[in-house]
Length: 121
Image (cartoon, rainbow, N blue to C red; front, side, top):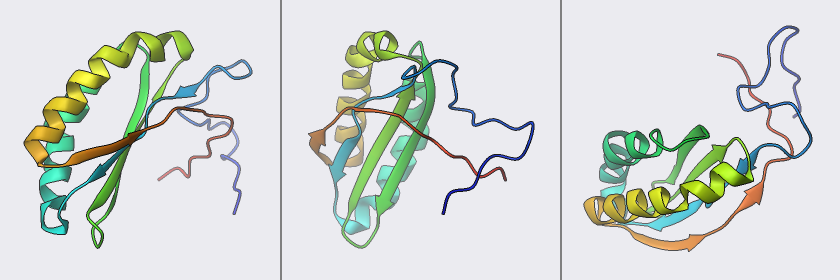
């Protein structure tokens, strides 16, 4: 279902200009299902604060599948240059967080955000 933002409201990820927003390195993580709460706690207390220090970060999110013990972290940066400059910081945050949460990082991917729709709360 595609819903437009209400008149006068814009997506917080929107930056004018074609192709100007980039999403880096969704990090796929595998954990024991019982460790998912530890993964969430580690994301809130360690990963997110570290990511928030990176220049150009617009948004970060953690998605989990509790049943299978899987998760994915996604972050959106203002542009490709900010994404490139953030890679070392992301790697440091990823390594520290994976060790603390007892998870294995199983993949890194990079995508360009071409559309993001936000449903205001």
